[in-house]
Each structure stands twice: as C-alpha cells, then as structure tokens.
Image (tube, rainbow, N blue to C red; front, side, top):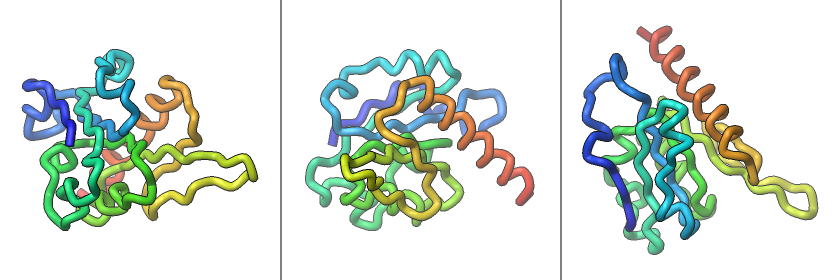
Length: 148
C-alpha cells in the first residue's frame, strides 16, 4: 500500500487553528507523484493513499483502523467502488464526509455510491472536486456543532 503523509499533516489534535485534513484515495499512477498543490492552495492538508492493490492489504477491509482515515476531516475517494473501501470508511466513521467519484457509463447508468457518501460525477475538474470537498467538510462541521 503506497501512502504519503507529510510530517506536518495530521499534527493538530483539533480543527481549530489548522487546515482541514484531506485524504485522497486513488490508484491512478499519475496521482502517486502529484504534489496536490491545488488542494493545498484551497486550504487543505493532504495525505494520499494509492490503495492496497490486494484488498487484504487494506486495514479497513480487515475490520481494522486506518491512521489516515482516523486523522482525516474529509476523503476524496477514487478507488474501485467494488473494493468496498468507501463503505468501510462510513462504517467506522459515519460522521466523516466521503466524496466518491461516480463514474458515468455509456448506457447512461451511474456507478452506485455507498450509503452516506457524497457522489461526484466523474470525470470532474479539480476545482469541481475542491468545491465538493469544501461543501462536504463544512456540512460535517455544521452537523458536529449542532450535535454539540
């Protein structure tokens, strides 16, 4: 499993006074070398997980905790929906917003999105992704404040 977490990311215990933590999950090779500068410019601390390749390599799919998911404020999920990673995240952290790339097929159908996840039509521009992430993270913060 390839993961990149800058040392400064996930360093603050609370949201006050720090940037929201974005976990990008995607297995496309180009993202493995991305610096995610546009996400950083939008105000996010960014960590990246390329996925396990083998589903048994993902701690979430074995019912275990994932330190990246535990530290994230929002997830941009682009892994194969059939793996069940997005659903596993929602089971472990139902309050965590998970924005899922929803692929559109030639026959007009859309990939299903796990319950509680925010669908994002794919392909989508980076600015569209950032907008969806900011809205999902703000909605989660508002819901947490209401719950008290």
